[in-house]
Amino acid sequence: MTTTGEEHEAARGGPWWWARWRSAVLDGALAAASAVECAVEGVPFARDAGIAPAVGVVFGLLAGSVLVVRRRWPIAVVLVAIAITPAEMGFLMGVVGLYTLAASELPRRIIGSLAGMSLVGTLIVTFVRVRQDMARGDLTLGDWFVPFASITTAIGMTAPPVLLGLYVGARRRLMESLRERADSLERELQLLAERAEERAEWARGEERTRIAREMHDVVAHRVSLMVVHAAALQAIARKDPDKAVKNAALVGDMGRQALTELREMLGVLRSGDGVRGGSSSAVPAAVEVAAAAAVAVSRAVVDEGAVEGPCLSDVEELVGQSAAAGMVVDLSVEGEARSYAAEIEQTAFRVVQEALTNVHKHAAGAKTYVRLAHRVSEIAMQVENEPPPEAGSASSARLPSGGNGLVGMKERVVALGGVFVSGPTEAGGFRVSAVIPAV
Image (cartoon, rainbow, N blue to C red):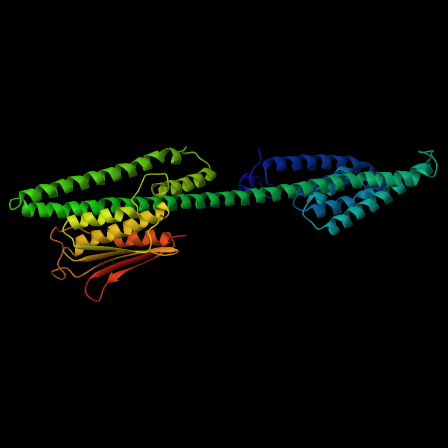
C-alpha cells in the first residue's frame, strides 16, 4: 500500500533532524557500534604512537560516535573517517559514511571527490601496512601481493557502499517523484469531480428550467382560455343559456386537453427516473454520465418518438380556440406548407400559443393577426395585435401574469439557432416575431 506525499510528511515525528524515531534508534546503534570499534582499535594505535592506552580509547570513542550525525552532516562523517584511516580506525564509520553520502542529495562531484579521497587513503594505508608486515616476516607472499591487497581492500571498502548509496538515493528520489505525481493526480481528480458536480448541477438547473417552460406552455394557454370562457359564462349564464352551455362545454374540453398534456409530460419524466437513478456512492465518472442523462431526459419531450407533441398543423385549431373565446383572429400562411423536425414544429407552435395567451391576458378584445411563412431554409411566424378596445385596460377576466412567457419563447427559439424579437408597435399594439432555421 502506497502513501501520498502529504501522508508521508505527516508520518514525520522523530527527534531533532530525524524523520522517525526508528531512524534515530538505528543511527544511535550504529554510532555506539562504531565507538566501540574505534575504542578497541585505539589501544594498538596508542601503543604504536607511544601514548597511554586510555587516551587511545577516549580518542576512539569520540571519533566513532561522530557516526550519529551521518544523516545531518554526511560530509563531516566521511572526513573524520578519512582522517582516522592512518590509525587503522573507523572502518564501520567509513563504510556507513560513504553509503550515507552517496544516498544524499549532494552534488555528484562532491560525492565523487570524497569517495576518491577515501579510496586513496585506504589504498595508501593498506599498502604501507601490508608492506610492513612482509618486511617483518609476518607475510611470506611475493611482492605482487602488496599492490593486489592494497587495490582490492581499497575498492572493497569504497565501491560497494558508494554504489549501494547511489542506488538507494535514486530509488528514494523516484519514490518522492511518484508521491508528488500521486498528489497531483489526486488534486486533478478532485478538481474533475468538482467540475462534474458543477456540470450535474447545471444539467439539473437546465432540466428545471425546461420543465418550468413546458408546464407554462401547456398550462398557461389552456387555463387562460378556460378563465376567459368562465368569465363569459358568468356574464351570459342568465341572458343566453344556450351559449352558456356551449361555453361550459368548451371549458371542459380545454381542461381535459390540459390534463392530457400534463399526464403525457409527467409520464416522460417518470420514465426517465430509471435512466437518472444510480447509487449515491458513484464515482466522479458516474456523475458525468448522470449529468448527460439528465440533459438527455430533459429533451425527451421534444424528441421524435417521445410524447406526441403539438405541431404546425395544430395552429389552425389553436386559432379557432381563441376565436371561440371571443378573440378576433386572422390567420394567414405564406409559402408551401411542409413538415419540419418535431422540435422545430413544437417551438413554432409554442411561440404562437404563448403570443395568443398574452393577448388574452393583456389585450382582451383586440384584433390579432397570426402569420406563418414557409421559406426555403427557415420558418417565420408573427403574432401582432391591435390596441384593445379600451387602451391600457387589463383583461376583464383579470388573468395573472408571471412574466416568463416572453423569456421562455426566446429561450426556445435561440436554442434552435433562431432569432426572436418582441415589443410594442407604433399603433399601440404588441408584436411577437420569430425566425427558426429549418435545416
